[in-house]
Length: 283
Ligand code: AMP
Image (cartoon, rainbow, N blue to C red; front, side):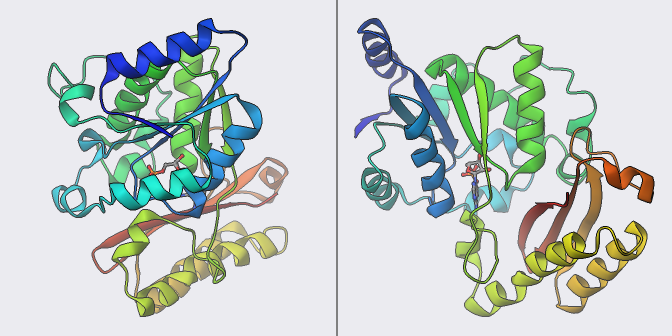
């Protein structure tokens, strides 16, 4: 695996590769502390493109919580080993100054159809501005054919798909299903900050999502949501939202008529000082 911190050097190699023939590039942006979920994205990228680039960059502009940014796990050496174990071709791990040479202020603002203001956007103001800012910057640097992201961050990939349309990009967005622990807990870099006991408790998120899926056609949406929120709160976690929404526009689904639409249950909850999110497609 070739490792680059420096943007011109990375771009020089990517240009050479592109000029050498029919090369397609798959790109997997991450913030590191890699787990099997990330590695599955790399493996997927390798099946659809000739060259796979992974980036590791803890993007300061998408954190609205200073402590979360400071405590975000940074374990580059073990990340490199993991990426080599799945034969990732290129790792790009720039510094903040490389990504934001002119400072971190937002320079471009996109109309994201209000999706950036809902759910995660409501509880983490400015989060999606930062996500869009860094993804756009990384795409401009790497210029991939495929962008591979996880279903784990449902709202994130929905917003990025809007961004790609807004900028008339030909990059194809590929979504991989969420990788879970045997317990059902969605893999997340933030899980590293949980104790074993907390990880066990946090499986309530998966259990309630399963409940929502199994009862989607049987119980009213209001009652599903109430039951799931109660269960999560009873476990000791603090719920920010548990909502059944339309997959396309993330608007709440209210009536059984709308159950025909593609719906997804989305949840965000705190385990102590750690905020976890998860989701499940219901139909
Ligand atoms: P992150 O490093 O958390 O910013 O995530 C980088 C990419 O990995 C994003 O596209 C995430 O949606 C994806 N990802 C994170 N966790 C998982 C998981 N458990 N399964 C599949 N993809 C994931």
